[in-house]
Image (cartoon, rainbow, N blue to C red; front, side, top):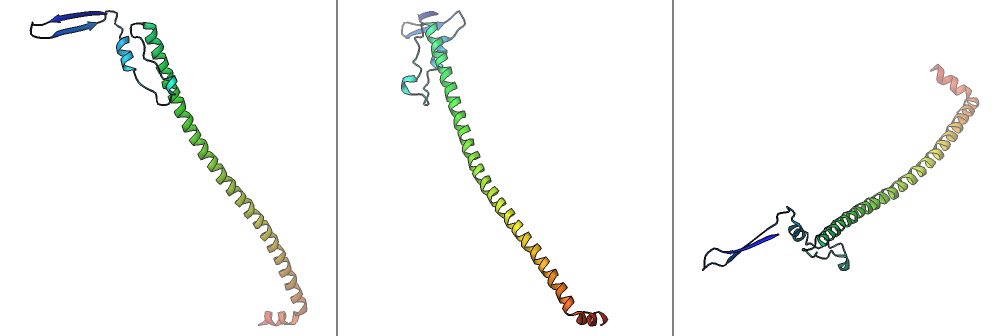
Length: 143
């Protein structure tokens, strides 16, 4: 890093210019990453690096990357838990519907059997009536 300080004129304050020849901007990156992560406990928050040590800046960047990943995973877990709650609610509703279908099927079977018995009784009574009143049947046919 090269730093230069110049005074443009005697009545003006000094102007300081700093630049790096190696093309890296670790200091700028470290400043850009100075953020907090609300999902993390205070003791797990990334500690700002010692910008003069490249390894410190790299550790800080890695810590921030892991904090972002943690936030993303935590968000995905929340989304999946919400989906799970919705699916469980649907399952409960589907079970209620299945129970209602089973009840209706049983009622249908019972009513079908009752109908079959009633039709049989009706046919038997109609035959009895025909045997008991053959003359009335003959009169109706001739009219």
